[in-house]
Image (tube, rainbow, N blue to C red; front, top):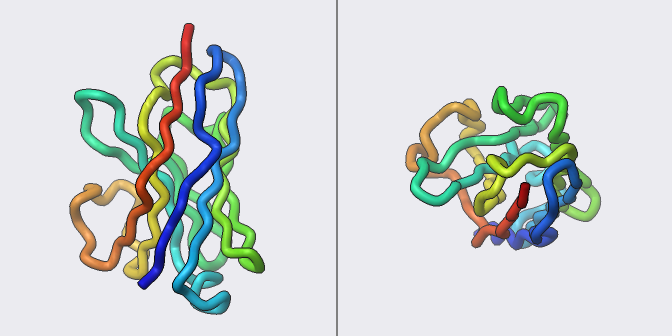
Length: 129
C-alpha cells in the first residue's frame, strides 16, 4: 500500500515562502508517474479543501485563492511531490496533506469521498501577519 510522508512545513511571516515535499513509498515508479497527486489543507474549524492537483500528464489544477502563488510539481524518478508556496498569507495557515488518488477525482471532490485516495499524516504551515 502506498505510504506518503510530508515535510517542509513551518512558521513564516506573511509574504514569505515555503516548499512542501511528499515522499511516496510502496508504489512503483511507473504507477507513481501516472497517479494523480494532490495537496489538501485543513484550517482550524474549517472543512478540509483541495489546494492543488497534478495528473499523470502533468496537467495542474489549483484552488482559486492560491492561483498564481502556489505551484505543484512531481519528481517521478524519486517519487516526490512538491508544493511551492509563495506570497503566503495568514489565511494559508493550515495542516497540509499529500494525497495519492488512483481514481483521479477532480480537486473539488469532497475530501471524504474517493475510496482510492491515500493520505499522508500532514505537515503544519503557520503564517503570521
